[in-house]
Length: 83
Image (cartoon, rainbow, N blue to C red):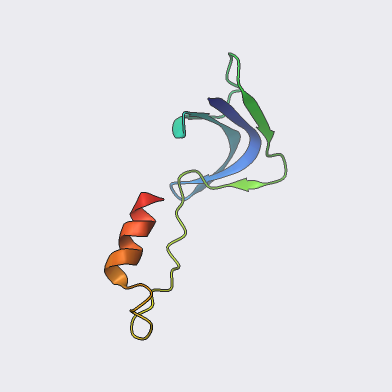
């Protein structure tokens, strides 16, 4: 699947840039200020939005100390890595 995220304010490497992102099969292929050519399965209009390519929310709550019977650092880390 090929997706175009167009017209957003891209936050990347400490800079703000108006531009577009091409995502193919879940991976970022291109970040560009020019509108890419070609066909896309999906086009997302990000006008007026901030786009943070590849950012991961690292705010997590492990159940340690406390309810390790339900989950612990090992199980929750493996779950996060699996997506």
